Image 1 (cartoon, rainbow, N blue to C red):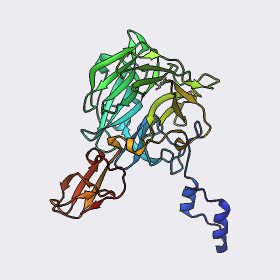
Image 2: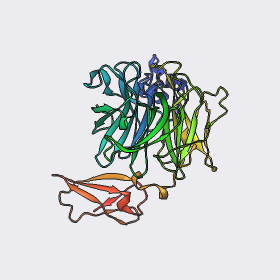
Image 3: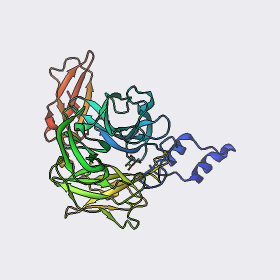
Image 4: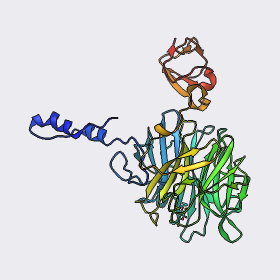
Length: 401
Ligand code: GAL
């Protein structure tokens, strides 16, 4: 949306003898159209976003992004924000309230991550559950039918008996989801990074749990050209430090050190940030969003976010550069429509007909689209998706008769 110059509002409304700024104009002028790494980031209600070290989930049916993270203000727990464009976020509340949850009271949550399970149709949240002193070293799980919550806490435990502190999450194209976690080696705290596959319902861990000897934290994973890239920080508490990335040909594998991805990072501090997650922006072939936190020496509610583009080079290197301001639309390559994956397309059409026996849906080229339907008492719901539509290319118009 374009900014409306301030003088316009004065010109238009000053004939009333008073200067008024209509609410919609205030809102229009505050719409964000870019990322500004390291700057304070306000939600659509003008409050500082409090959502640290979390992740973003894209809800395909509604085109909505949900951002989860540590709510470091009160009440403590995991917060949720939603957005249609990744720039403008609406606060949706605390999705998991630590102090109000039996089984979590007395401890705290760090690095919450959410994944949507298409089979069970549930949102599943994983997090580092800890008590003072960081000796508990547990992972926790909570679940919800809807993205924003409130999530129902299930349990916390040491995965496969390993101490687990910072966690990351990665969902592969086949729906399999993994937790990367900083684990102990013997009594050496966070001396290893482990990658564990979750069960099909994402509610617990499997035995597919592979170790890499690397003393690191803040794991984020991306997949590029059938290789997996693991980005980590060093273990320096809230102090920013150099990031390192590793690669492997499978997710659950022993990773190989590839050095720092940062270019022009003169202080060698990952541009004063610590990795939290890598979000693959839907609709872009190479849209990898680095989500980092600028803790400013302590995990306060005032910590800023450092969101930067991750560039994957043709030689298979991961690169991270500073931008004072940037737009993903300007940097990443849109996925050609015909290459979009099946999961990029799904939509529901509501038809006012109880008897769907003779109903057909056609796309704009006149092709008959196979669909699944459910009969309601007063209407039919046609579930169209690209898997069944073969060549139907857009989310555009359909003719139902
Ligand atoms: C950091 C870690 C954070 C938090 C912090 C506590 O190294 O990444 O998630 O645990 O230490 O000091």
